[in-house]
Image (cartoon, helix red, strand yellow):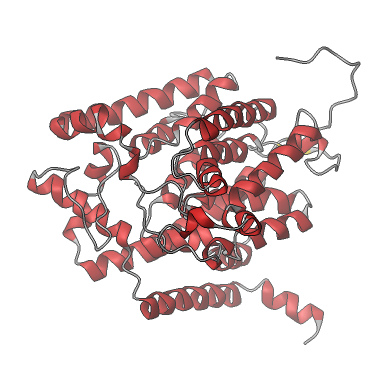
Length: 418
């Protein structure tokens, strides 16, 4: 086959569509062979049923893993339609819906880089390949909502400045799951006060709606359940790719305490400082997301779907080798190759530690590179390339001219992943 013909096939919507269909069919076949229970979807279904039946929202557990509800009451209201569907239809809806959301996330990731319209073959091919990134794969496998939340946040943050209602989608995402609140801090730190206040108002509205519809559950969640981190799962298992998981496994201590809290605080300051330094530049968004994933007590591997926009940024800026390294880290599934049954996660030899905390270590490496690269990662070049940098809204600015030296200036998951 000639190179010209091969390129023509790659640019064909029919061929790329067939690739996506084949990728999705392979995924479904694997789920059938493994008897994947889509346990998180079952938790959402039980939450919706609890709302409809007026039963205790935070008192039930479902599946053989005894999984509870961990999201705010507002989320349970959104899950009500899942209780109306037969189980088979619900699972199909989650697989197809998450595949569509993945395509949307690819599109929004391209918009973050300044590419406002991806060719259809590129979009379909990228979606077919991204399905096999471990965080994305696990999200679809468990019937999770990570892709939906990432799309809400990224859609909102890549809208033009001053767009009507900008911040509302971010506030709603925060109302469903609290961790997107770090993006509100990012908006305020980068002096986009109007957008940040709008997001806070939208979040407050979700809390109010939850309180009006489910007053008892709201009181229970905000005064008690929110602080019961053990409900979410064991922080030391390999599923947890946050800094706390890394520290717990490295020390062999299920409750590392200050050994985790102190570096987590420092990491939060560093990550948000880097995001603030990037400002409205497109690197501010993934830096904020990665900061949240690192410092959150528990960040299951499927939370790291933000690897999709990270890969898009690295690739479009010409850092193909680093993009390949990141793609390899998020595809090889090294955390699952290490024996981790029972409490073996706390008894790992030193050489296995990097394999069980690949996402956290990769993020620290990225932070280090961004820290030494200069005040604007995309204009100075995260990996040493100097180039004009498109902003998140597609406009370009020239690299800054050198200046004289100045004084330095002085944010439900379920435990099932096995």
